[in-house]
Length: 321
Image (cartoon, rainbow, N blue to C red; front, side, top):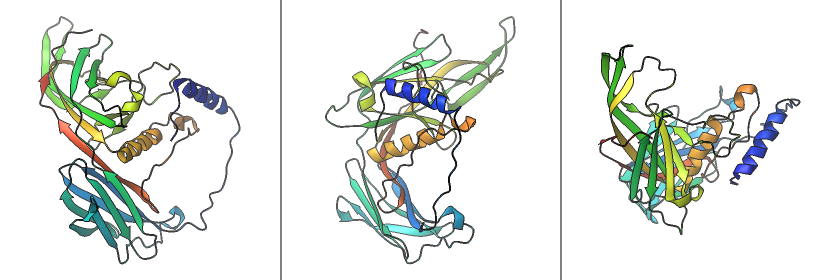
């Protein structure tokens, strides 16, 4: 996948903006020869039970009358070339969930799956190492956000992929016009995103992180070490959205971070999700170029690995910028 320079991105945005005033082109989808395929999805966390979900896909034009049951399913799961034990159960409308042992960093996991009437699919991934040694430089900015610079030791001889999720806890305090406290309530929740990750970026220096949504409404910031200079990644966030007019002032703030290392397959899966979810042209009837990533040979879906570590709660003691 080509990664564009900032100059190229600006040119693409200008070109796309011009295209908004152009004509509309319609076309018919050729779906006459679409066949059912196997969809396999799994994000395997190091040292946790591995779970793989498998379903049968059908053309959207046939979804109301197609049989989605997997007939005579068979699978093989290998770790570093050796077959491992696994259990399975049927789920949903004919799908299957496969569960197996926990795997460790460095393990190469491979899976194959077959069912009647569809091509056999296969995929592989490697469980990455733990997040490298790091330091945090944190400041509360006068513009209403907190800046966290993550400085980490990176292996320059390979491409690595990282992510971080952040929570905060403390008090929200509401004051009256005289500065007297009228109410307070405890908080423990995810931080709020900051930056124009979901808007058109004309300024090449604008803060525009890659972000995906996590279960529960959290956001995960993710990046490739090839895109960051000097082994440093900056996360900007706040403690309330601008429309939280009665949110109060956050005080006695403590932070907690979850750091992730991602397999290349998981990074590409997350990037595809980010690229399609935050399409800034969709609201005006124009679609920016995007893609759907899959590393399932002869099928659809994703088969990925990652490792996660979390910090203890730590106080936000740095001076405001």
